[in-house]
Image (tube, rainbow, N blue to C red; front, side):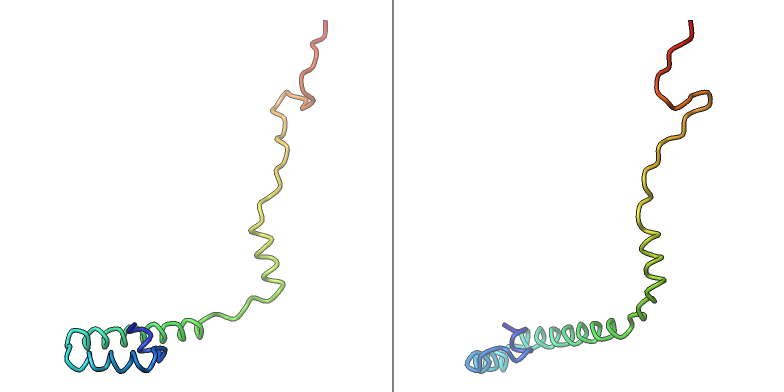
Length: 93
């Protein structure tokens, strides 16, 4: 309800009722002020975050980066020394 009030999204009737309550409730006034500060800080952070993004990579650099992140294809293991790599072989009689 308080977030809607701060955003101006609370119906007029509910705003009036809330404002009447706030006239005599110091804890709610303090909480509303704290919430207002928090919301403003979040909005500033979001704006700063958008402004501080680096420019996009040039297409060639992006393509090289993406290619470097792809897994390498699995290669057949080279035969160990003395093996022909052709599976089992018959021994000569």
